Image 1 (tube, helix red, strand yellow):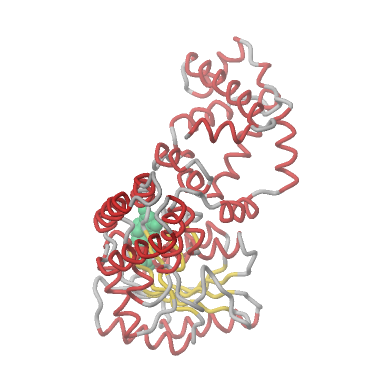
Image 2: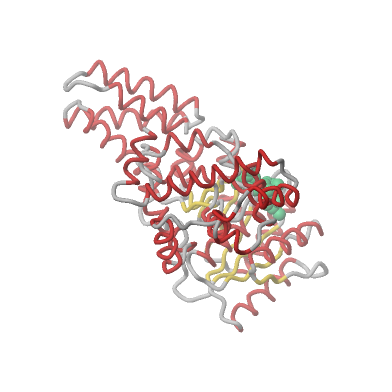
Length: 437
Ligand code: GDP
Ligand code: MG
Protein backbone atom coordinates (compact mmCIF):
# COMPACT_ATOMS: atom_id res chain seq x y z
CA UNK A 1 0.00 0.00 0.00
CA UNK A 2 2.62 2.52 1.02
CA UNK A 3 4.70 1.77 -2.05
CA UNK A 4 1.71 2.16 -4.35
CA UNK A 5 0.94 5.47 -2.66
CA UNK A 6 4.45 6.80 -3.10
CA UNK A 7 4.53 5.85 -6.79
CA UNK A 8 1.18 7.55 -7.31
CA UNK A 9 2.37 10.67 -5.50
CA UNK A 10 5.53 10.85 -7.53
CA UNK A 11 3.70 10.43 -10.82
CA UNK A 12 1.17 13.06 -9.75
CA UNK A 13 3.92 15.60 -9.21
CA UNK A 14 4.77 15.71 -12.89
CA UNK A 15 2.14 17.88 -14.50
CA UNK A 16 3.89 19.73 -17.30
CA UNK A 17 6.20 18.73 -20.05
CA UNK A 18 9.87 19.66 -19.84
CA UNK A 19 9.55 20.49 -16.18
CA UNK A 20 12.82 19.16 -14.81
CA UNK A 21 12.19 20.78 -11.47
CA UNK A 22 9.04 18.69 -11.05
CA UNK A 23 10.97 15.58 -11.99
CA UNK A 24 13.57 16.35 -9.34
CA UNK A 25 10.85 16.88 -6.77
CA UNK A 26 9.10 13.67 -7.75
CA UNK A 27 12.23 11.54 -7.56
CA UNK A 28 13.36 13.12 -4.29
CA UNK A 29 10.07 12.28 -2.67
CA UNK A 30 10.06 8.81 -4.17
CA UNK A 31 13.53 8.22 -2.79
CA UNK A 32 12.44 9.24 0.68
CA UNK A 33 9.44 6.96 0.75
CA UNK A 34 11.30 4.00 -0.70
CA UNK A 35 13.95 4.30 1.99
CA UNK A 36 11.22 4.60 4.59
CA UNK A 37 9.65 1.41 3.27
CA UNK A 38 12.94 -0.35 3.97
CA UNK A 39 14.14 -0.73 0.38
CA UNK A 40 17.91 -1.09 0.43
CA UNK A 41 19.69 2.23 -0.23
CA UNK A 42 21.74 0.89 -3.12
CA UNK A 43 18.61 -0.36 -4.85
CA UNK A 44 16.93 3.00 -4.30
CA UNK A 45 19.89 4.89 -5.71
CA UNK A 46 20.03 2.69 -8.77
CA UNK A 47 16.30 2.96 -9.34
CA UNK A 48 16.15 6.74 -8.98
CA UNK A 49 19.13 7.53 -11.18
CA UNK A 50 17.96 5.16 -13.88
CA UNK A 51 14.41 6.56 -13.87
CA UNK A 52 15.74 10.14 -14.02
CA UNK A 53 18.08 9.37 -16.85
CA UNK A 54 15.53 7.44 -18.86
CA UNK A 55 12.82 10.09 -18.38
CA UNK A 56 15.11 12.90 -19.46
CA UNK A 57 16.28 10.95 -22.46
CA UNK A 58 12.73 10.53 -23.71
CA UNK A 59 11.51 13.96 -22.61
CA UNK A 60 10.18 14.87 -19.18
CA UNK A 61 6.48 14.10 -18.95
CA UNK A 62 4.03 11.94 -17.07
CA UNK A 63 3.98 9.11 -19.61
CA UNK A 64 7.72 8.85 -19.99
CA UNK A 65 8.23 8.99 -16.25
CA UNK A 66 5.63 6.28 -15.71
CA UNK A 67 7.17 4.08 -18.36
CA UNK A 68 10.70 4.55 -17.03
CA UNK A 69 9.53 3.69 -13.52
CA UNK A 70 7.61 0.65 -14.70
CA UNK A 71 10.52 -0.65 -16.77
CA UNK A 72 13.09 -0.15 -14.04
CA UNK A 73 10.89 -1.79 -11.41
CA UNK A 74 10.34 -4.81 -13.62
CA UNK A 75 14.05 -4.86 -14.28
CA UNK A 76 15.10 -4.93 -10.63
CA UNK A 77 12.56 -7.62 -9.80
CA UNK A 78 13.74 -9.88 -12.60
CA UNK A 79 16.75 -12.11 -13.01
CA UNK A 80 17.27 -12.89 -16.66
CA UNK A 81 16.53 -16.53 -17.40
CA UNK A 82 15.49 -17.34 -13.83
CA UNK A 83 12.14 -19.02 -13.19
CA UNK A 84 9.07 -17.02 -12.11
CA UNK A 85 6.35 -18.23 -9.78
CA UNK A 86 6.32 -22.03 -9.85
CA UNK A 87 8.03 -24.03 -12.59
CA UNK A 88 7.88 -27.77 -13.08
CA UNK A 89 10.83 -30.07 -13.68
CA UNK A 90 10.93 -31.58 -17.16
CA UNK A 91 10.44 -35.00 -15.63
CA UNK A 92 8.04 -35.38 -12.67
CA UNK A 93 8.05 -35.32 -9.75
CA UNK A 94 9.27 -31.77 -9.17
CA UNK A 95 11.02 -31.93 -5.80
CA UNK A 96 10.96 -28.81 -3.64
CA UNK A 97 12.89 -28.35 -0.42
CA UNK A 98 11.44 -25.73 1.93
CA UNK A 99 14.11 -24.27 4.19
CA UNK A 100 14.43 -21.36 6.59
CA UNK A 101 14.59 -20.28 10.20
CA UNK A 102 12.12 -21.41 12.82
CA UNK A 103 8.90 -19.42 12.81
CA UNK A 104 9.50 -17.97 9.36
CA UNK A 105 6.43 -19.74 8.01
CA UNK A 106 7.90 -22.85 6.33
CA UNK A 107 5.23 -25.29 7.42
CA UNK A 108 2.34 -22.95 6.69
CA UNK A 109 3.85 -22.04 3.33
CA UNK A 110 4.36 -25.71 2.48
CA UNK A 111 0.61 -26.12 2.98
CA UNK A 112 -0.17 -23.00 0.95
CA UNK A 113 2.05 -24.11 -1.88
CA UNK A 114 0.46 -27.57 -1.88
CA UNK A 115 -2.96 -25.92 -2.00
CA UNK A 116 -1.90 -23.62 -4.86
CA UNK A 117 -0.51 -26.52 -6.90
CA UNK A 118 -3.56 -28.66 -6.26
CA UNK A 119 -6.25 -26.02 -6.83
CA UNK A 120 -4.72 -23.77 -9.46
CA UNK A 121 -2.38 -26.11 -11.30
CA UNK A 122 -4.43 -29.28 -10.80
CA UNK A 123 -1.36 -31.28 -9.73
CA UNK A 124 -1.01 -34.36 -7.57
CA UNK A 125 1.00 -33.18 -4.59
CA UNK A 126 2.82 -35.10 -1.86
CA UNK A 127 4.04 -33.38 1.30
CA UNK A 128 6.92 -34.83 3.31
CA UNK A 129 7.35 -33.96 7.00
CA UNK A 130 11.12 -33.81 7.44
CA UNK A 131 11.05 -31.46 10.42
CA UNK A 132 11.61 -33.99 13.17
CA UNK A 133 13.08 -31.55 15.66
CA UNK A 134 9.77 -30.95 17.33
CA UNK A 135 6.94 -33.48 17.44
CA UNK A 136 4.43 -30.67 17.26
CA UNK A 137 5.78 -29.84 13.81
CA UNK A 138 4.61 -33.15 12.34
CA UNK A 139 1.21 -32.76 13.96
CA UNK A 140 0.91 -29.23 12.54
CA UNK A 141 1.61 -30.52 9.06
CA UNK A 142 -0.88 -33.36 9.56
CA UNK A 143 -3.60 -30.85 10.35
CA UNK A 144 -2.74 -28.61 7.44
CA UNK A 145 -2.56 -31.37 4.83
CA UNK A 146 -5.77 -33.02 6.00
CA UNK A 147 -7.53 -29.66 5.85
CA UNK A 148 -6.55 -29.18 2.19
CA UNK A 149 -6.82 -32.88 1.41
CA UNK A 150 -3.23 -33.43 0.29
CA UNK A 151 -1.24 -36.61 1.00
CA UNK A 152 1.46 -36.60 3.65
CA UNK A 153 4.41 -38.83 4.44
CA UNK A 154 5.29 -38.57 8.13
CA UNK A 155 6.86 -40.71 10.81
CA UNK A 156 7.87 -39.26 14.15
CA UNK A 157 10.40 -42.05 14.70
CA UNK A 158 12.34 -41.76 11.45
CA UNK A 159 15.34 -39.63 10.61
CA UNK A 160 14.82 -36.69 8.21
CA UNK A 161 16.82 -38.38 5.44
CA UNK A 162 14.87 -41.63 5.86
CA UNK A 163 11.53 -39.91 5.61
CA UNK A 164 12.68 -38.03 2.52
CA UNK A 165 13.73 -41.28 0.87
CA UNK A 166 10.36 -42.82 1.67
CA UNK A 167 8.57 -39.79 0.28
CA UNK A 168 10.51 -39.84 -2.97
CA UNK A 169 9.88 -43.56 -3.42
CA UNK A 170 6.15 -43.09 -2.87
CA UNK A 171 6.15 -40.20 -5.35
CA UNK A 172 7.88 -42.34 -8.00
CA UNK A 173 5.63 -45.35 -7.42
CA UNK A 174 2.37 -43.44 -7.29
CA UNK A 175 3.14 -40.84 -9.94
CA UNK A 176 2.95 -37.63 -7.96
CA UNK A 177 3.64 -34.41 -9.86
CA UNK A 178 5.24 -32.51 -7.00
CA UNK A 179 6.94 -33.39 -3.70
CA UNK A 180 7.16 -30.63 -1.08
CA UNK A 181 9.58 -31.29 1.76
CA UNK A 182 9.14 -29.30 4.98
CA UNK A 183 12.36 -29.14 7.00
CA UNK A 184 13.40 -28.14 10.50
CA UNK A 185 14.48 -24.61 11.29
CA UNK A 186 16.39 -23.00 14.13
CA UNK A 187 16.03 -19.67 15.86
CA UNK A 188 19.32 -18.62 14.30
CA UNK A 189 21.67 -20.06 11.75
CA UNK A 190 23.88 -22.76 13.29
CA UNK A 191 26.16 -25.49 11.97
CA UNK A 192 23.98 -28.33 13.17
CA UNK A 193 21.07 -27.04 11.11
CA UNK A 194 23.22 -26.47 8.05
CA UNK A 195 24.66 -29.98 8.29
CA UNK A 196 21.21 -31.54 8.59
CA UNK A 197 19.94 -29.52 5.63
CA UNK A 198 22.96 -30.39 3.53
CA UNK A 199 22.32 -34.07 4.20
CA UNK A 200 18.62 -33.78 3.38
CA UNK A 201 19.50 -31.89 0.22
CA UNK A 202 21.87 -34.64 -0.88
CA UNK A 203 19.19 -37.28 -0.49
CA UNK A 204 16.36 -35.21 -1.94
CA UNK A 205 18.31 -33.88 -4.93
CA UNK A 206 15.70 -31.11 -5.20
CA UNK A 207 14.75 -29.17 -8.32
CA UNK A 208 13.98 -26.15 -6.19
CA UNK A 209 15.23 -24.91 -2.82
CA UNK A 210 12.83 -22.28 -1.53
CA UNK A 211 14.11 -20.10 1.25
CA UNK A 212 11.17 -19.00 3.39
CA UNK A 213 11.72 -15.67 5.16
CA UNK A 214 9.58 -13.48 7.38
CA UNK A 215 9.10 -10.13 5.63
CA UNK A 216 8.69 -8.40 8.97
CA UNK A 217 12.35 -8.98 9.73
CA UNK A 218 13.20 -6.50 6.95
CA UNK A 219 16.80 -6.46 5.79
CA UNK A 220 17.54 -9.42 8.11
CA UNK A 221 15.49 -11.55 5.71
CA UNK A 222 17.91 -10.57 2.96
CA UNK A 223 20.99 -11.35 5.03
CA UNK A 224 19.78 -14.79 6.15
CA UNK A 225 18.73 -15.61 2.58
CA UNK A 226 22.26 -14.75 1.49
CA UNK A 227 23.74 -17.07 4.13
CA UNK A 228 21.47 -19.95 3.13
CA UNK A 229 22.37 -19.32 -0.48
CA UNK A 230 26.08 -19.49 0.27
CA UNK A 231 25.89 -22.53 2.56
CA UNK A 232 23.15 -24.66 1.04
CA UNK A 233 22.22 -23.02 -2.22
CA UNK A 234 18.74 -21.65 -2.92
CA UNK A 235 16.76 -21.21 -6.13
CA UNK A 236 14.09 -18.89 -4.85
CA UNK A 237 12.80 -16.91 -1.89
CA UNK A 238 9.30 -16.83 -0.44
CA UNK A 239 8.52 -13.84 1.76
CA UNK A 240 5.81 -14.47 4.34
CA UNK A 241 3.74 -12.27 6.66
CA UNK A 242 3.25 -9.53 4.12
CA UNK A 243 -0.13 -8.89 5.67
CA UNK A 244 1.47 -7.71 8.90
CA UNK A 245 2.99 -4.29 9.31
CA UNK A 246 5.97 -5.28 7.25
CA UNK A 247 7.24 -2.30 5.34
CA UNK A 248 7.22 -4.30 2.14
CA UNK A 249 10.24 -2.61 0.62
CA UNK A 250 12.42 -5.61 1.28
CA UNK A 251 10.60 -7.37 -1.57
CA UNK A 252 11.78 -4.72 -4.03
CA UNK A 253 15.46 -5.10 -3.30
CA UNK A 254 15.73 -8.75 -2.39
CA UNK A 255 16.04 -10.20 -5.88
CA UNK A 256 18.98 -7.93 -6.78
CA UNK A 257 20.59 -8.11 -3.36
CA UNK A 258 20.60 -11.90 -3.11
CA UNK A 259 20.77 -12.66 -6.80
CA UNK A 260 17.90 -15.15 -6.47
CA UNK A 261 14.35 -14.41 -7.57
CA UNK A 262 11.50 -13.83 -5.17
CA UNK A 263 9.00 -16.51 -6.18
CA UNK A 264 5.99 -16.20 -3.87
CA UNK A 265 4.57 -13.88 -1.27
CA UNK A 266 2.54 -15.04 1.72
CA UNK A 267 0.00 -12.59 3.04
CA UNK A 268 -2.13 -14.29 5.64
CA UNK A 269 -2.47 -17.40 7.74
CA UNK A 270 -5.01 -19.15 5.53
CA UNK A 271 -4.21 -21.59 2.76
CA UNK A 272 -5.27 -19.38 -0.21
CA UNK A 273 -3.13 -16.48 1.05
CA UNK A 274 -0.19 -17.11 -1.27
CA UNK A 275 0.59 -15.13 -4.42
CA UNK A 276 2.97 -15.97 -7.21
CA UNK A 277 5.58 -13.26 -7.59
CA UNK A 278 5.57 -12.51 -11.29
CA UNK A 279 7.46 -9.23 -11.83
CA UNK A 280 5.35 -7.48 -14.49
CA UNK A 281 2.15 -8.39 -12.67
CA UNK A 282 3.52 -7.14 -9.37
CA UNK A 283 4.67 -3.90 -10.99
CA UNK A 284 1.21 -3.40 -12.43
CA UNK A 285 -0.24 -3.83 -8.96
CA UNK A 286 2.36 -1.51 -7.46
CA UNK A 287 1.39 1.20 -9.93
CA UNK A 288 -2.21 0.81 -8.84
CA UNK A 289 -3.20 -0.70 -12.18
CA UNK A 290 -4.39 -4.01 -10.74
CA UNK A 291 -3.48 -7.52 -11.78
CA UNK A 292 -6.29 -8.96 -13.80
CA UNK A 293 -4.26 -11.96 -14.92
CA UNK A 294 -3.68 -13.28 -11.41
CA UNK A 295 -7.28 -12.61 -10.48
CA UNK A 296 -8.52 -14.47 -13.54
CA UNK A 297 -6.29 -17.45 -12.73
CA UNK A 298 -7.52 -17.59 -9.17
CA UNK A 299 -11.12 -17.24 -10.20
CA UNK A 300 -10.80 -19.86 -12.92
CA UNK A 301 -9.49 -22.34 -10.37
CA UNK A 302 -12.07 -21.55 -7.72
CA UNK A 303 -15.20 -21.06 -9.76
CA UNK A 304 -17.03 -23.60 -11.83
CA UNK A 305 -18.04 -21.75 -15.03
CA UNK A 306 -21.41 -23.49 -15.35
CA UNK A 307 -22.27 -22.67 -11.78
CA UNK A 308 -21.12 -19.07 -12.30
CA UNK A 309 -23.39 -18.70 -15.31
CA UNK A 310 -26.37 -20.12 -13.43
CA UNK A 311 -25.68 -17.70 -10.59
CA UNK A 312 -25.40 -14.71 -12.92
CA UNK A 313 -28.77 -15.58 -14.42
CA UNK A 314 -30.31 -15.76 -10.97
CA UNK A 315 -28.82 -12.44 -9.95
CA UNK A 316 -30.03 -10.80 -13.13
CA UNK A 317 -33.55 -12.02 -12.48
CA UNK A 318 -33.40 -10.91 -8.86
CA UNK A 319 -33.71 -14.48 -7.60
CA UNK A 320 -30.55 -14.56 -5.52
CA UNK A 321 -31.47 -16.32 -2.27
CA UNK A 322 -29.87 -17.38 1.00
CA UNK A 323 -28.66 -20.74 -0.29
CA UNK A 324 -26.86 -18.94 -3.11
CA UNK A 325 -25.39 -16.56 -0.60
CA UNK A 326 -23.90 -19.37 1.47
CA UNK A 327 -22.57 -21.08 -1.69
CA UNK A 328 -20.92 -17.86 -2.80
CA UNK A 329 -19.34 -17.37 0.59
CA UNK A 330 -17.77 -20.84 0.32
CA UNK A 331 -16.41 -20.06 -3.15
CA UNK A 332 -15.04 -16.70 -2.05
CA UNK A 333 -12.95 -18.43 0.60
CA UNK A 334 -10.93 -20.09 -2.13
CA UNK A 335 -9.93 -16.75 -3.61
CA UNK A 336 -8.11 -15.58 -0.50
CA UNK A 337 -8.52 -12.41 1.50
CA UNK A 338 -10.88 -9.67 0.36
CA UNK A 339 -8.04 -7.20 0.46
CA UNK A 340 -5.87 -9.14 -1.94
CA UNK A 341 -8.77 -9.65 -4.34
CA UNK A 342 -9.58 -5.93 -4.37
CA UNK A 343 -5.92 -5.09 -4.99
CA UNK A 344 -6.05 -7.11 -8.19
CA UNK A 345 -9.02 -5.24 -9.68
CA UNK A 346 -7.96 -2.13 -11.62
CA UNK A 347 -9.21 1.00 -9.91
CA UNK A 348 -10.13 -0.81 -6.70
CA UNK A 349 -6.81 -0.28 -4.96
CA UNK A 350 -8.34 2.36 -2.71
CA UNK A 351 -11.10 0.06 -1.68
CA UNK A 352 -8.55 -2.57 -0.74
CA UNK A 353 -7.15 -0.11 1.73
CA UNK A 354 -10.53 0.69 3.21
CA UNK A 355 -11.28 -2.97 3.62
CA UNK A 356 -7.96 -3.48 5.34
CA UNK A 357 -7.67 -6.80 7.05
CA UNK A 358 -11.38 -7.38 7.29
CA UNK A 359 -12.08 -11.05 7.74
CA UNK A 360 -15.28 -11.40 5.80
CA UNK A 361 -15.94 -14.94 6.88
CA UNK A 362 -15.69 -14.19 10.58
CA UNK A 363 -17.31 -10.78 10.57
CA UNK A 364 -20.27 -10.24 12.91
CA UNK A 365 -22.52 -9.63 9.94
CA UNK A 366 -21.72 -12.93 8.30
CA UNK A 367 -22.02 -14.79 11.57
CA UNK A 368 -25.47 -13.27 12.08
CA UNK A 369 -26.58 -14.17 8.58
CA UNK A 370 -25.29 -17.70 8.98
CA UNK A 371 -27.10 -18.11 12.31
CA UNK A 372 -30.28 -16.76 10.76
CA UNK A 373 -30.06 -18.91 7.65
CA UNK A 374 -29.51 -22.04 9.69
CA UNK A 375 -32.85 -21.39 11.40
CA UNK A 376 -34.68 -21.08 8.08
CA UNK A 377 -36.64 -23.84 6.41
CA UNK A 378 -35.39 -24.91 2.97
CA UNK A 379 -38.34 -23.07 1.40
CA UNK A 380 -37.50 -19.87 3.22
CA UNK A 381 -33.89 -20.08 2.06
CA UNK A 382 -35.08 -20.38 -1.51
CA UNK A 383 -37.58 -17.60 -1.21
CA UNK A 384 -36.86 -14.90 1.37
CA UNK A 385 -40.19 -13.24 0.49
CA UNK A 386 -41.98 -15.93 2.49
CA UNK A 387 -40.64 -14.42 5.68
CA UNK A 388 -43.67 -12.79 7.32
CA UNK A 389 -43.72 -11.57 10.90
CA UNK A 390 -44.57 -14.95 12.44
CA UNK A 391 -41.71 -16.57 10.61
CA UNK A 392 -39.36 -13.75 11.53
CA UNK A 393 -40.20 -14.23 15.21
CA UNK A 394 -39.39 -17.92 14.84
CA UNK A 395 -36.08 -17.05 13.16
CA UNK A 396 -35.15 -14.66 15.95
CA UNK A 397 -35.87 -17.28 18.60
CA UNK A 398 -33.99 -19.98 16.70
CA UNK A 399 -30.90 -17.95 15.91
CA UNK A 400 -30.57 -16.04 19.16
CA UNK A 401 -30.82 -12.71 17.35
CA UNK A 402 -33.21 -9.97 18.34
CA UNK A 403 -36.18 -9.34 16.09
CA UNK A 404 -34.67 -6.03 15.15
CA UNK A 405 -31.45 -7.72 14.07
CA UNK A 406 -33.39 -10.20 11.96
CA UNK A 407 -35.31 -7.39 10.30
CA UNK A 408 -32.18 -5.43 9.61
CA UNK A 409 -30.33 -8.43 8.14
CA UNK A 410 -33.23 -9.32 5.89
CA UNK A 411 -33.55 -5.75 4.68
CA UNK A 412 -29.84 -5.54 3.96
CA UNK A 413 -29.90 -8.80 2.12
CA UNK A 414 -32.73 -7.59 -0.09
CA UNK A 415 -31.00 -4.34 -0.95
CA UNK A 416 -27.73 -6.20 -1.63
CA UNK A 417 -29.55 -8.52 -4.02
CA UNK A 418 -31.03 -5.47 -5.75
CA UNK A 419 -27.60 -3.85 -6.05
CA UNK A 420 -26.15 -7.08 -7.46
CA UNK A 421 -28.92 -7.15 -10.04
CA UNK A 422 -28.05 -3.61 -11.07
CA UNK A 423 -24.32 -4.36 -11.19
CA UNK A 424 -24.85 -7.39 -13.38
CA UNK A 425 -26.47 -5.20 -16.01
CA UNK A 426 -24.60 -3.36 -18.76
CA UNK A 427 -21.80 -1.13 -17.47
CA UNK A 428 -22.39 -2.24 -13.89
CA UNK A 429 -18.78 -3.03 -13.14
CA UNK A 430 -17.61 0.25 -14.56
CA UNK A 431 -20.16 2.18 -12.49
CA UNK A 432 -18.83 0.54 -9.36
CA UNK A 433 -15.22 1.28 -10.25
CA UNK A 434 -16.05 4.93 -10.88
CA UNK A 435 -17.83 5.06 -7.57
CA UNK A 436 -14.72 3.85 -5.75
CA UNK A 437 -12.29 6.30 -7.32
P1 GDP B 1 7.95 -22.57 10.59
O1 GDP B 1 8.51 -22.69 11.97
O2 GDP B 1 8.92 -21.91 9.66
O3 GDP B 1 7.44 -23.86 10.06
O4 GDP B 1 6.72 -21.55 10.69
P2 GDP B 1 5.15 -21.85 10.72
O5 GDP B 1 4.68 -22.25 9.39
O6 GDP B 1 4.84 -22.77 11.84
O7 GDP B 1 4.60 -20.39 10.99
C1 GDP B 1 4.86 -19.66 12.16
C2 GDP B 1 3.69 -18.72 12.44
O8 GDP B 1 3.61 -17.75 11.42
C3 GDP B 1 2.36 -19.44 12.45
O9 GDP B 1 1.59 -18.93 13.49
C4 GDP B 1 1.74 -19.09 11.10
O10 GDP B 1 0.34 -19.08 11.16
C5 GDP B 1 2.30 -17.71 10.88
N1 GDP B 1 2.38 -17.36 9.45
C6 GDP B 1 2.99 -18.02 8.44
N2 GDP B 1 2.86 -17.36 7.27
C7 GDP B 1 2.14 -16.24 7.53
C8 GDP B 1 1.68 -15.15 6.74
O11 GDP B 1 1.90 -15.03 5.53
N3 GDP B 1 0.96 -14.21 7.40
C9 GDP B 1 0.70 -14.28 8.73
N4 GDP B 1 0.00 -13.29 9.29
N5 GDP B 1 1.13 -15.27 9.50
C10 GDP B 1 1.83 -16.25 8.91
MG1 MG C 1 7.63 -25.74 10.76
